[in-house]
Length: 429
Image (cartoon, helix red, strand yellow):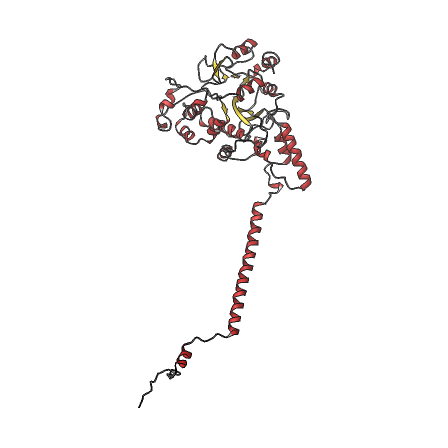
C-alpha cells in the first residue's frame, strides 16, 4: 500500500505528470488591461514633469530679464539734467565732444521718450566732469587703477596733459592759466582739489568751470596731503586720454607757453620727481626705523611735492596700498609724507623711469619751512627769464638741455598783472 504525501497548504498535492509540474511553476501571464493602465500612468507622469520644467524655465527667464535689463528712472539720478550740463563744460579740453555727446543724448531721449539713454563707449573713456561721481576713495582708486590689456585703442586717441591743482580755495592766477590753455582744446584736462565746502567762482567759459573733484579736508604736513594728491591722480586717470600728470598749486605759474610744455612732457621718456637722500635732519633724519623692512634706511628719499608723472607711474601710485599704509602709520608730523612718500616709492619701484629732478622752480635759499614768495615788486621780465635760463643744465631723454623748469612758484597774487603783461612778449601766450 502506497502512502500519499500530505502538505499543510491547500492545492499543494503532487501531480503524477511532468507537464503538470511545469504548469505549476510557470509565471502567470499578466492581464492586458492592467498593463495598458500602467503605461498610461507613466506617460502622464512624464508629461507633467516636462510641463513643470518648462514653466519653471519661463519664470527664471523673466527674473533674469528684470535683473539685467532694468533701467533706473530719471528720478534716481544723482544729478539733475541741468546740473549735469552745467558740469560737462570746462577744463577737459574737449568741449566739442561734450557738446556733441549732449546733443546725441538729447536726440535719443526725445526719440525714446523720458527714458535716459544708455551710456556710450565714449562716456567710459571720457567720463566728463569729475564732480559727477559719488565714489569713496577706496572705490575711486580701485576704479582708476583698471588697465586695458588690449594694446590698440578702439578710438582715435590724442594724448592729453592733466593739470592737477591742489589748493585751499581761490586760484589767484586763473586768468593767467586761462590764457595758457586758450586755443588748445583736446590737449589738456584740469582737475581742482579745494576745501570740501569751497565752490570755485569762475565763468562758464573758463577751463576751471565744473572741474572741482569730490574732496576732503587736508592738513599741512600730514598724510592727508598725499591722499589729496592720489585723489587728483585717480580722477584724472578715469579719462583714458590723459597720459601726463602735473601737480601744481594756486601760487604756481607756467614760464613757457602751452605747445612747449605739451611737447616736452608728451615726448618725454621719464617722469619728473625730485628724489635724493642726504645726511641732514631735514632728510635722512626723518626716517623712522619702524618702517623696516618695507622701507630700509638706505631706501629713504626726499623731494619736492610738485611732481610730473607718466600714466603708468600714476597708476601704480594710485594702486599702492603697501607703502602708503607704512607712511600713514610711521611718517607722522615732522616727517612730512608729501615730501617723502612718492620719491621713496618711485625709488623702490621705478627708479630707472624717473629723471630724479623737478620741473617746477622754487627758491629755498632763504631757509625755513616755506620757500620764498615773490610779489609785484620782485617779478620782472628779467626775473622770469632767469628762471627759464638760469645757467643750469639737466638731461632730457638722455641728452643735455638748458630747458629744465616749465613752471615756477611761489608767487603772490599781486604779481598777476606783471605776468599777464609778459604773456604777449616773453611767455608768448
